Length: 270
Image 1 (cartoon, rainbow, N blue to C red):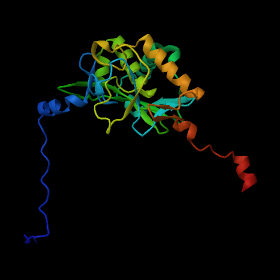
Image 2 (tube, rainbow, N blue to C red; image 1 turned 90 degrees about the vertical axis):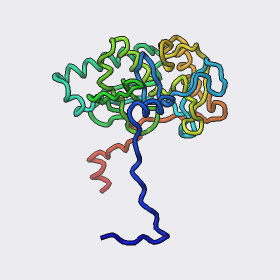
Image 3 (cartoon, one colour; image 1 turned 180 degrees about the vertical axis):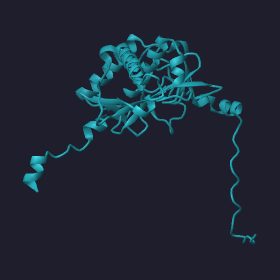
Image 4 (tube, rainbow, N blue to C red; image 1 turned 180 degrees about the horizontal axis):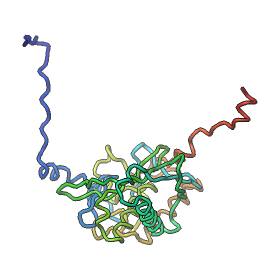
């Protein structure tokens, strides 16, 4: 039965209408980082070629939370495979070994610039390696992988099915790119919106960078030397802020977790 609506009542909002896939992709294109021939990285946003008229020769750091998060000295990141996501493979154990090899190779590209240690575990973990069997694609391209920035939470390093269609070198370089995010690096073109996605400039490097896109997305000696200098200065206390934004050293979730009280000690204090 219908009832009369009073003047103070507002009509119910209409269900929002979606754009078709082509128009949606066109609307999203300025916000999507495309690299390696149509591959998309969803960890970050893309930004303009020369944000704020800066030279295209500088390293970009995350400052989303009002500070620059970097891993503390001697940080150990504990990781594991998401077991459920691995069940889509005919041979899950072999799939895990494939990903382990590529992860090792990706970290190997960074060499001694890697600022943290990694350990595969089955208990308290800082991030899970998750495989997404359903491709994540639209007319702009396909997401190959996504990662996270330094903080004390638990995270995912997600690998999408489309990554397996790439040449092996692309697989390794894509993972190296994602580990750049894990180390605290934003995309080369991170300044699309300073208020929404704040970032800070540190150091100088060539336009070619693993955090760039297209044919310029290659890990360089300058990428590594800038990263090493950044962490060395932060750990020594020499670098406490960059352009007025404070640097904050963070520990991972596994370091921050509450340690269980030994049974014998609990009995004595009960």
